[in-house]
Length: 593
Image (cartoon, rainbow, N blue to C red; front, side, top):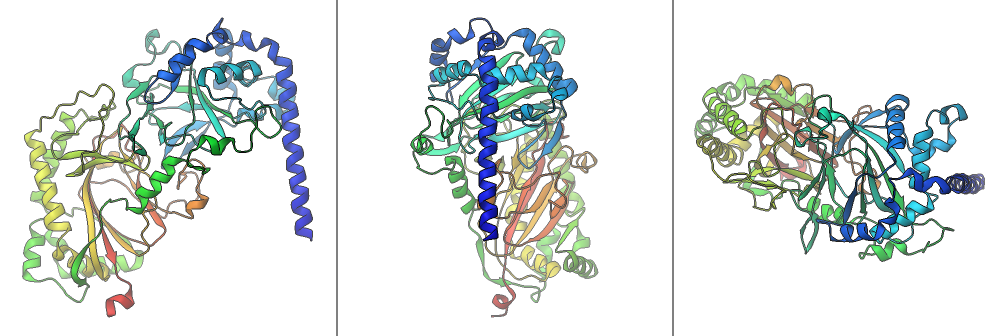
C-alpha cells in the first residue's frame, strides 16, 4: 500500500511539474511572440512557400539550408554568451565525441541573476519555439502542428577530432530536427569554413528502395556556415546523417542542435495515434534499428562459422607439418614450448593476451613497407580527411551498413554507392598488390588453418569447433565499428592481428582505432543515442587494446560482451589494418564427448 501511494504521489508530482513547465513556456511565448519576427532575418517568415519547394525536392531526403536565418546582432550576442557564459562538458561514446552544454529548455529554471547573463540565448530560444516560427517550420516541412510546450535544444562545440557518427535522430516523439551554425565569421581570414576543416553535415541515402538501411557513403555534404539553419523532418529509416570529424587545427564547429516535437496532450493538433500513422511499420522504433537488428543477427563478421572436421583441443599438439606452415609466417619464438607454456599460463590468469612481434621479421618487413606506401598514395598522412570512396578499388570494398560499421574489407561484396564528388581512381599500385596478396595469404593459409587453431588451443587450452574472419582496413577520418550485439550465445575466442604505422601515436587512444570490449547489457534498455559505451563511466570498458604494429590480441569473449573499433581520426598517421578472426569455443562438457 505504501508503494502504491508513493507511485501515485510521484505521478501527481510529475503531472504538476509538466503543467507548471507548460505554463511557464506559454507565459514566456505569450510575452515574446510580438517580437519573434524581429529575431529572424528580415522577410524570412514570408518565404515559407518558396522554401517548401526547395525542401520537398532536396536529396537524399527532404531538407533545406536557410542563410541568413537570424538577426545578425542577436546571433552575435548568442555566440558571445555561448563562449563566455556556458559550461561545456566533453562527451564520448562509441558513436560520438564532442562538447555539449546543458539543455537550454532549463533556462527558465535558472536563478534570476544567472538568467540575466543569457538574454540573447533566451530570446533566440523563445523565438524558435514561438507560434509564429513553428507555423513557418510546419509550412516549410509539411510536417503538421508542432509542440510549443516541449522545447529541446542544446549548444555543441566540435573541436579537433570531435565527430558524430551516422544516426537518424529518431527518439521519442521528435518531428523536425534543426541545426543553427555559429562558427567564427572571421574564420580562414573571412573566407568561411573550408572543406579541409571537416565538420560537414553528411546526408545519406537509403541503400536501396527495398532497404531501410543507409548507403555506405553520403551523397550530400553541408559545411557549417555562419547564421545558417538546416531543417529536416525526422523519419525512421530515412533521415540518416552524421557530423564529419573536425580536422582543422584551432577550428571550432559551434552550433545549436534541437528538435521540434509532435504536439503534446492538450495542445492543438495532438492525436493519440500521430506517431503510428507516421511510422508505417506501426511500431514506435526506428526502421534503421530494425535493419540493424537484422544485421546483428547475421553477425558482425557477416559469415557463418566454418566448422572443422573435428573439434580441436590442446591435447592434439603440433605436427611437423603444422610447424612448417606456422613458421612460414609466425615469429619462431611463439612456437617454442617454453614460450607457449608461458603464454598459456598468462592467458589462464587473464583470459586475454597481446603478443608483440607476432609475424616473423621477413613477413612483417614486407607488410610494413607496402602498407605505408598504400596509405601515402591515398593521402592518409594525418592531416586531411580523405574523401569518401578512397581506397575502394581492386579487391578492396567498403563494408557496411554505416549504422553499425564502415571499413574496407578484402574480397568483400561490392556494396558501396558513389559518394558526393567521388573521383577516386581504380589504379592498383604494385605496393597494394603485394600487400593484398600477403594479407590474403595470412587470412586463408594461416588464420583459417587447422594448424593455427591447434596452436591457439595450445596457448588457451580451449577446444575450438570452427572459425570465421576477414582482413580489414580502417581508413582515418572514415571508418569504425559500433558496439553491436552479434547474436552469439556461446563463448568466442577473438584473435586480431593489428598493423599500424608509428604505434606510439596510437598508444593513448587519442586518434582512436583501439578495440574495446564492453558489457552489451539488454538491447531493450539501450541508451537513447544507441551507444553501448561512455568514456566518462567508471569501469565502462571491460578491456581496451590499443592499435599497435604487428601485435596479436587473443581475447576470450563471453556471450553478451560486445566489441567495437573506435572511429579512426583523420589525425592518425595512417590506416588501421588488421586480420580479424573469431573461433567458436566448445563448452567443457561438449569437448569431452
